[in-house]
Length: 304
Image 1 (tube, rainbow, N blue to C red):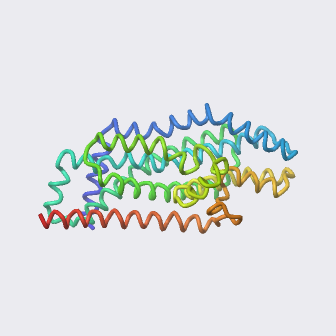
Image 2: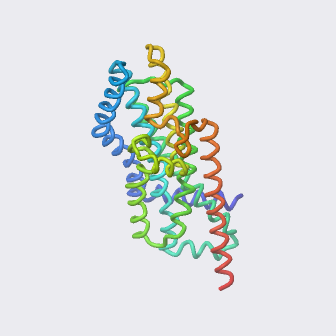
């Protein structure tokens, strides 16, 4: 335990020592929020208004802004929890480049302890950034339309923590195989560009073809995004019900923004408990895989 704590502290200090890496991680969610609010907000506004008009319903600007704002910030946080983790885990690759990892592996430190120290330090660094992004998102929601209860706020914070654990585990497994800064930059670019689409953050799954919806329902990140959508928008849906919206209309809206996820495009939506279970199990599997990779690498080196 002493070795794990010491190595974790060392990795966190090195991360914050590199000011460029830290501030680039910190500013990424802020840039995304500006882009979302600038370009996607109008698209979502028009989409909601046209859908409500087709259903013969009207909604106030405050409720609409709260609904769109909740969708935007939850999508942003869902993406940031994973993409920032890939940036925060670059310290592991940097140690390979500088030879520091090779020096650490010849010490009595067990390979699983070394691997876990990278994971925990990356998790801590990523959480600092994602929770900072949460604070900015809450300020944005307060400005455009606040419908969150205290319980909703805590659920958002919990979901960010769980999704950051998942993103860190995924990034650790992927970056384990990288050995140069160029490879890390290439992978980070691909993840930043593509993850938002495959997790349903940039565009709701309901807008995709049925075949693609079935495929995306197999990915754990999809459920992480939905978990964030639910508390971020629950208050808005409650307000719609209080304003006289028929239950079927509210449920249709929930489907359209991926608050309800239908596994393999089936009729029944996955329960909230099921979503938490999928995300938790996936995270545990990736962590176990990452530890196993560290053990296998150490075993190969001993054979040499």
